[in-house]
Image (cartoon, rainbow, N blue to C red; front, side, top):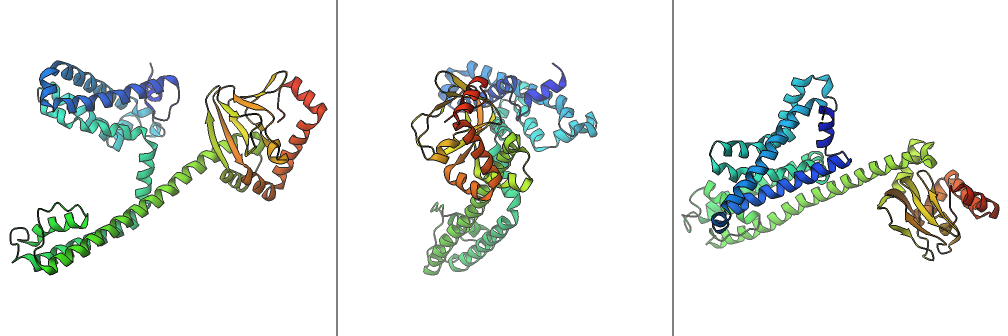
Length: 389
């Protein structure tokens, strides 16, 4: 297997069967390695299954050592790496976050080979290997980066409240509780526990001013963490909407019906359309159901169940518009003839699109009229290029 194929095999974005098989093996190895680490810390399991745990750990460790070596080898195949040269591309990967995680993932097995079994306790780093395959965590990283100023502002407020609380607590409690509040650094532990509303109870104010301060600090902690949560939730929601919009934009641009539209029109249409995926054999809509949306085929094929034969629609075609235009129930059942990606247009958005984009509405109406015409229906049935619903 050449270097390019190895890179594609280990690329998280690859969708071919070999890449999916590697990802499955990778995820299983991570889970098995974590299980072996946890089992090794349980005395009863360690005594009864010591050999099995050792063998499982050795297999997982060997897999991650091999993965690290292969990723070093294929690093020059990364996009843009050809401009750097093989050596610089490998160095850049080693000093990247992904390279650091893979290096740390290979360390427990390498150290274990020289006889230090305590290194197995550090195999918890294997759980970080899932991050590479989690778009949601990558999105969270972008959210934190984009909202860093607001987050740092709240962090500054947190630090101010923390230091003020520790200083005042030391002032109020140093005589009543000289052990727990012997100094401001010692009082910081109480301030952290109280501000986070954890409340371990190991250090408790004894004076009335100290207890009043504790109440204020608890409420302040709730407000601080509520601000953090609000900033992250708002940023994450914006990031999800952005990702969905970009994905929908790409799908809309693939549909010939929208291909000749300008960027502003595509952006407006992308806001109204929603992508859906259906596996082969799935029922997309049934005859007799009320029409609540229409569909545009992006990838794959759908089968329209009409008498006497089924009609197959491919990428670029649409269906389901007649029920929206006439208000009548669906008059055909549609199933996925293969795995397909569709764009759906809700009935409310359909009427909005008709008002905002008369050219698109006219094209949909013309296609609907053509399908309703008896002679066109006969032509479509023989040509097998569209359907009547």
